[in-house]
Length: 420
Image (cartoon, rainbow, N blue to C red; front, side, top):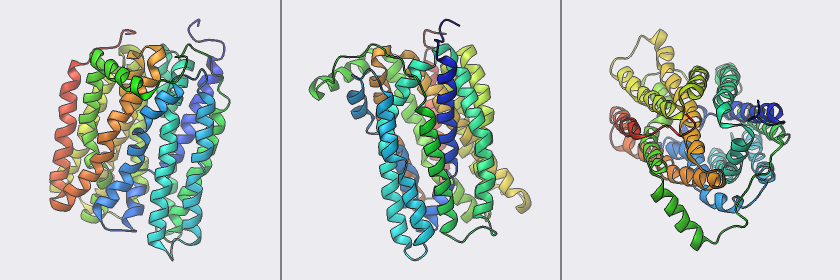
């Protein structure tokens, strides 16, 4: 079709390959299951467990305004993504090698190395992401993004379910001892991240009109404030996102609640990874269809509805524990909801931002959205760890429910972007 361009098929395949390899790799060190379990074996201090889970999102989101101003004046964004990837993606190889060689003898050093590496990797990936989204917006036409998201996330989910099976075997009783078992997971993640970058390198990026040069901050920040003030839908999607991010209060602690409170074995972490990916597959396919038929507003609302499901189900299981034989499978439904919720953030919220952004302002819109969201995303699990430390799991789950529900109610004021 005429709106696809001559390189559409090639770019579709390369961007999808990038996405599939990246997200599948990260499934081996899932921030909602594997990382909390890993850190919980190195320390029992709940806020630190929350920090380990929230650090990637926070440092990924917060620097994006800086990146938006820096790359906004570049006609080609692809080289920036590749340079940041070549520096950042080998970081997890450092954790893998330390865990395999010396982690058993120096657990606190392993924890410190992991936190430093996690911070460096996520910061560099965040600095590249504004440019990555700009490339995505240029090479995948708006009317084809629904099928792109559905295909990429659907395939990713299937592969990541397989990753969950591997995680279960490695972390189970028959796997290597701690921390070498986690070292193998970090090593696998690193290999897939490099494969992801290689796929992206084959994208043919078109040249679009951009601002001629980088703006000084004294001019750039007032312009961002003006964009935020003048675009009501930009303000609303940011406010909805901030409320939805309160669901993150509880996310790092579901797996610990399962193992420490309900007595579900640590080998079930792999089951939870697979369950999360199953939720992602189902939601990705449904939301991809819904996005092309009805747009990103309804997808955003469905995302919020799924976000409410996780803490409500965790509350129900806490007060009415299922029989031991099926407890892990019942609790896995919490992660099915999480997977569906996470799949919707790209297809709903981020796609909404791409749809309302003028083409020349895409980096500014993406940077503003992600940086503002980063303030709450970064703080929510830390606050959740503190809340758990001073109260209880039911209070934590209830707070997550209230925040996400408030975002769902506010989302009713969003209007579908003009393309629909």
